[in-house]
Image (cartoon, rainbow, N blue to C red; front, top):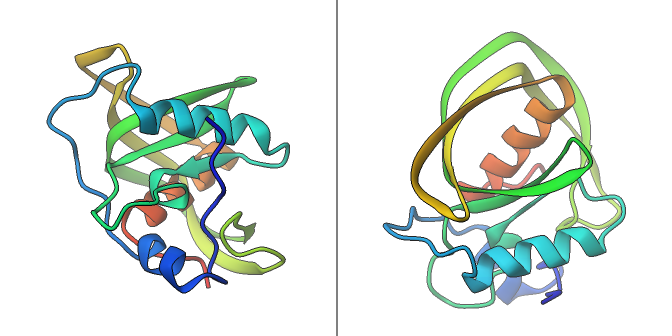
Length: 151
């Protein structure tokens, strides 16, 4: 289901955006948050990523998950953890769906390695190194999962 994106203009939504996401012990491929992340991300033409707390509507902590647009497809990464950074630290001007109309220069590394689970593969831990633009998007989404905004 397409869900409205939480923005800083709404105090209740802002408190959700500032929540730290928690890892979930179990996942099912049809979990509501997974479906909603994919549907909502697909509905925003300019989106490169979308974190769970950007669409979470409950007062409890959001699950640790984000959608990433990679290779012309959306994938959802569950319980992601950064295990390594590499490359030089570069300033990148970013926008955020939760901060409409705002831009900020943010230092990002050119390479980041994550471990994560995928929907439908709850026991298979994947490891991927993302580079360049994808690395910056991954770092942006991981900031969201830590309750951090770019401004």
